Amino acid sequence: MPSPLAHCVAAVDYGYPWEQVLHQFKYQQGHAWAHAMADWLLQHPDGPPLLRAADAILPVPLAPARLRERGYNQAWELTCALTRACGVRRKAHARWLSRRDTSRHQVGSSRVQRLRNLRDAFACHVQVRGQHILLVDDVMTTGATLFTLARLLQARGAASVTAMAFARTPLPGLS
Image (cartoon, rainbow, N blue to C red):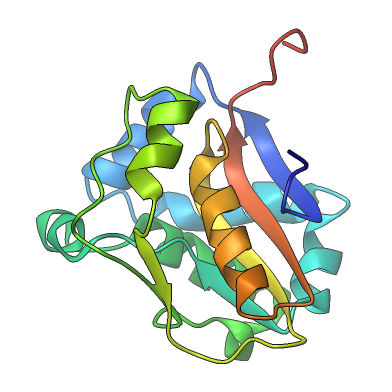
């Protein structure tokens, strides 16, 4: 099955030392990392053009229980840092997408398990027909989360869906 993402940009491969940085960012109130991660993403030649071309820039949502547990959504923090640095802050929307509490934690799950866990996990609360949407997340491992959201947005009429993630698990055979 082809990717539902028209394009995806990542700044670094997910591995040492970035896995420790991302752990701090996600689980240890490491908000300050958002600005450095945004700077890295903006150094990618496709980073600024993707941000400018998007009609809307959406963070991957956290389930309400996970948001209460952490106190913040790291994807929203990264989205804010990116849009502020690129001068497109008005395009960032934290509430257009939501995640239901019914989905399981994805860490350690295979791609098939992740896709199964994400079935009906997300909702889109606005009309996106004809819009170019950019999704933002901190890490792309199997692509299941971003692909699920892209398919949801396409089903709602999005013209295209692209993504940015600070780190990406290298594709097999390419690392």
